[in-house]
Image 1 (spheres, rainbow over the protein chains, first blue to last red):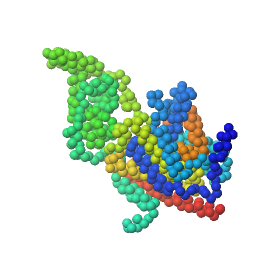
Image 2: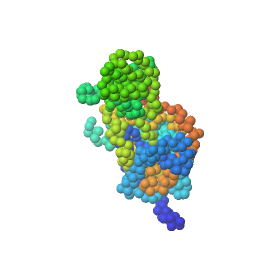
Image 3: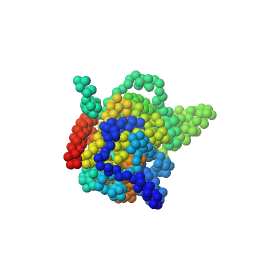
Image 4: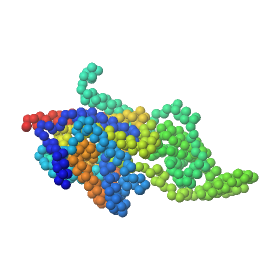
Length: 191
Length: 214
Length: 200
């Protein structure tokens, strides 16, 4: 057990080095945006649907719940939506494959730029443990909110936004509003 | 002016291009508007000559009995005629309402009305609006009644005609019709009341749509 | 109208999964290129120091929006066959708020958390675990929330339809807003950088 801990702490790096805030070798955000827009456009043209991510996470949760408590999952409309009628595996889902691709695409880009590093992203004024705790809490809120809004920033935001969906734009406005409103209270974590 | 444009940084160039595209878009009309369309007349003529656009009534009867529902059956008459009798599994979309209906361009659509004229008009409207697979029921409802509901046995039947008639009798009974014996003399023909064949609801018709959320 | 290709039956479900994979690679690649694998960069958006979240998202939205509009105009894409999220106004607003709060606390959103995990960020893993937990909580609470979540349903409606305005006009306004927003963002970044320099 201590070996594992040692290995972990050896690889965990504090990225709060002064003076090196944001490396300049990221691409120009406008170019990244155009690239992302072209990916989104090709998804619309080829599949007739946009991108998304939260659906894949939900499929996994539904599968786990179904494995432990199939009756409970069967009576719950939410899980049933992801499990289907049992003829097709819930993992044979477009979004699941998309997210697997996202993993690999991100890895490739990070590998090319040499940015693949086991580390914890955080500001200088907070400890590692607290950061991980906050990450978990933030993730829970995100999961809850994403399922309530039936989408996340990729699905409702990018997809819904580019098709001028009313729900998509309302969602994005509220995301920014909520994030800006809370930013002050967690400023210790990031700055 | 072009030299000035080229000198600007990429950001500004892309921005100006976007504004121009947006400005042009104001005059381009709505992409969801179905009331106007551009028709390629040459293409339409070629299709009319080459392609196969009709569905036989016997094929349709076969599909309904086998519960094969990969198509949408559209009844183009008005609603009174529809409620009086309609082919099981059909939806009532009078030709007037067709452009505001929920027919999709990638669906297989079979049209019928009393005869073939109205169906042909609807066929043209849909085909001009870029619908991919549109078919006319050959002979319309008249032919359906004639061949499926009330099949006739000629007065001097040959063995093959007799065998064929036996099959048609079964099909006719399934749809609530009455097979006609006795040659050309027409026995009383009652229009059967609309009887839905077992388990047809609009939902089971549609191919199971895969979830498309995010 | 030959596109969307899948809806017109050019290929079957299995091939569509492979296509999902390929599109996902492009998606993840660009996300990481933009620095979205780093939670710290993402959160900087909300402190006005680095506005790349806004820039990337809005540029992508505008690009795809213009692309889809013009593809539809030339008759390449059938826009009525393109799916996007149905609008459930109450759930969208509240869900967005909650997700925004989670975004700045956790530092990621679902797509970027996948990118962060694959580039080795451990907080990304915890974030994803939190995401599973949040979805599980939602699933368990779903019977109670079902009515709220399905309220104010407006179907697959878009802004020009809702306000009965010309679609192209809305497009134009969005582009103007984007450019104004980017100008403001650039100014904001410079302002914060100057402030930091004068403090430090």
